Image (cartoon, rainbow, N blue to C red):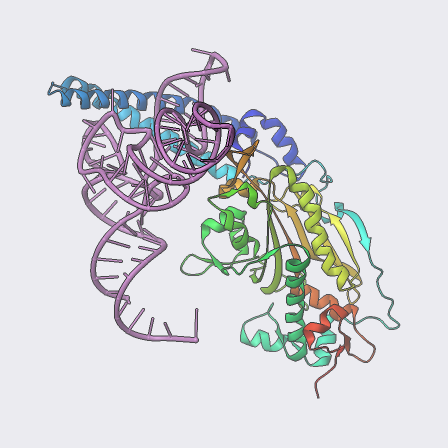
Length: 428
RNA sequence: GGAGAGAUGGCAGAGUGGUCGAAUGCGCCGGAUUCGAAAUCCGGUUUAGUGCUUGCACUAACGGGGGUUCGAAUCCCCCUCUCUCCGCCA
């Protein structure tokens, strides 16, 4: 949510910055609502002040045993006008609030202009794609040849966009998760958290999934939602709370399954594990002081990159352009891992700074300090990034570490998590 | 699932229709006292919003929503959550 004050003070500038992400702001409507709000609010408050004043006088008169009927008649006369003004004000403020909830965040000044994916800016490439003597297979063929990856059975159990993994492949998936969590907690200073996978609507509103993107979520019959990312429960830890300044920055990491309806992506990535209704992800979340958030974004992106580097997977870092930016983000770096089977880079992590956008929706604040003395509560900045998407990391390992004989070499850093095994071969 | 109790400021906790945004205690901040500290004493200490003469005024908020009333933390209705006991259970 944007600061309403910013819209009041400099609507034109807000509209201009939103244009960077291809969003047109209905400034006429906002100006109209604001003008009416101002007038009605002043009127309402005048009525309320008068009513409070008269009511107080009635109380005092009664206390002294005097007759208050004249005062009561006067305040009764206010009734209808007051009620009308209050109702109108409530309606306008509801309209304004609803409108405000659907306006995306302002892109940071460093965000490249552009409409979509093709305008994203490559920041750097790390690692060199391996050269295969024969055309590289994709992860579906590799996994199915090994007899460890099974889509038809998953379809039978549920439906498409689910997967079944068996044996050492299932274990490799778990090994990746453990390795990521251990690296972030032991080397990057994150606290591991275990969180609910079902959340209420308030939490979804807090991080920005609601009200605009309900169709992308799985909703339960009792009104709860399956989380589409650990970002939701983890970031909402800070909702409606004031964090002591000494606890900042707060760095949290969680491993959760993620559930996405993938509505609107029919026919896209239908093959393999790239786009699933259910996948695991290790997610990093940071709560920081506003002045630190862009340094924190670079740092957090580096933490995600460290996983790829340790796995020795080639990747590139892409700065999203305005048009490709998520609803709540002010700036985002995507990490794209090299997939030989597809001969392309595919997104495996997304690291974003939300500035105060989520914090304002959540009322997530920290107590400032001035010369060591406690000051006023102010909104924190929130960030998050995948570190990494586990399913896609598995895909990347399969494709990058495939051998001509159909086996998979296990990346060195994962071997301790695989009982020391060096490779994965088809079971007997 | 059944029965009961409750939800008030950073925390504890009073307030059951009228100058109550809210006693008191703790905590926190400032000051006094002290060589310094403890103790003690004095003062301060919620948030959001609006207006304009930018310092003042006003409005709103006592779990959430609705209602009664001239006036609601206080009365009524609905919802949510928490606690205790019983039952069930990984």
